[in-house]
Each structure stands twice: as structure tokens, then as C-alpha cells.
Amino acid sequence: MKTVKEIINEINEAKICTPHAIDDVVDISGVEQVDTIDPIEHRWYITETVVYKIGDEFFGVRGPTRLKSESMSYSDTSATCEAFEMVKVPSFTFMPKGD
Image (tube, rainbow, N blue to C red; front, top):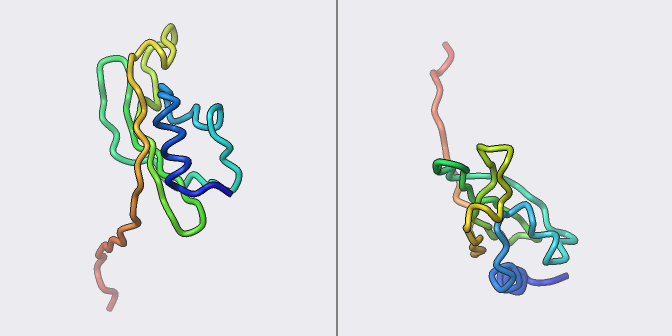
């Protein structure tokens, strides 16, 4: 199995135009998609970070994930994805205490 750094380097070198295409350029055996975060709306598409997990390591791929026009393809956005290492940050929430 490849390391997170090897996968990140391969994705960045491939200059893919959507996170949905990582399996076209990298063998993602053992890679689990765990979340999609940080949406930013552009006029014709939405950019997000797709978070993946390998073992106990995480990496993200940021790029267009949704198109707003059926006549567009991801290559029409002229965007290039960026892959990077990530860390899991625990978060907490609160709710009313029952009596």
C-alpha cells in the first residue's frame, strides 16, 4: 500500500480537475473517503475538500465537486485540484441536560 505522501504527490503531479477523478490517476486500494468539507460556491461550480483516510492518516483533495450547468464538464472550470495532508480534529457540541 502506498503512503499518504506518495498518493498526494501523484495527485498533485497529475493535475486533475476534480477530486472525483483521483482513482483515474492513483491506485486507491485501501483508501476510504470519510468526509466532504468546506464548500465554496463559484458561479458555475462548487469547490470542496474531499477527505480520505489510509490507516490512521488523512489527506484532502480540494477542487470542483459539483457543476451547476449540465452542459459543463469539470475541465471547463480550468481548476486544478490540490492534495495535502490533514489531521483529524475532535469537536464537541452541546445539548440541553435532561431533568
